[in-house]
Amino acid sequence: MKLLVLEEVAKNYGKGDALVPALRNISFSVERGECIAIMGRSGSGKSTLLNILGTVDEPTDGHYYVNDKDITTYSERERAALRNRMFGFVVQDFALIPYQTVLQNVMIPLEYASYSRKKRIEMAKNILTQVGLQEKIDTYPSKLSGGQQQRVAIARAIVNNAEVILCDEPTGALDYTTAQEIMDIFLKLNQEGKTIIIVTHDREIANKCSRIIEIKDGRNTTTAHPDSQTDTLPSQGS
Ligand SMILES: Nc1ncnc2c1ncn2[C@@H]1O[C@H](COP(=O)(O)OP(=O)(O)O)[C@@H](O)[C@H]1O
Ligand SMILES: [Mg+2]
Image (cartoon, rainbow, N blue to C red):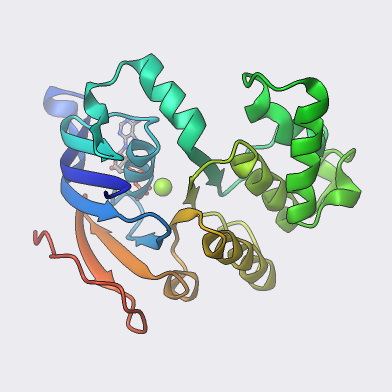
């Protein structure tokens, strides 16, 4: 069973003269445990694609299957439940809440879970230890470096046990060395079984993934990593 399957997905923004076709006829699938890079120019539809994969946004046309279920038939409530259970998001500017401590930020996704407060604190502390921030739990985001803030965001993305981590230019605001460190965390999480999808402009980061999907004008061409054993999916052409 494939984890994620996009079938001839299109996404338009606006209507009539103002219609913007952001994605056209996108088809590809993601196996459990893959690490995939999505590349393409600014405006090519990468963020739109990531939002559809994460069920934040819905396709205008086509189908999206998660574990063989066509989620284009789901209600907003069903999609939200699926999203909370399966997907974690990491973005370029970290999106941390400035007036909450590191621990409080990481506990946010657990707010709606049925765990006791004690259990939620324990879960958040465990994850923060995994990303090397156990000393910083009572610190506020503004007191942290960019790399440390991104580690907090990664901890928040995985604290709920998300199976898939969706990253939108996660190293775009970081210097070279810090970007490599953050990528190493994603690779470690991938080795531990997480499925990772990373939008990036950085060819070096993309080459560390097992597969690269190129988006051009809202269409995809899929290429295998030159060193990898991953099968090449048929190109959709354009
Ligand atoms: N909310 C929106 N409303 C209207 N147009 C949008 C919206 N979001 C994105 N777009 C347009 O859709 C296209 C793809 O955008 P996006 O997915 O953000 O590309 P990328 O992440 O590759 O830069 C662009 O032309 C962009 O201007
Ligand atoms: Mg974008």
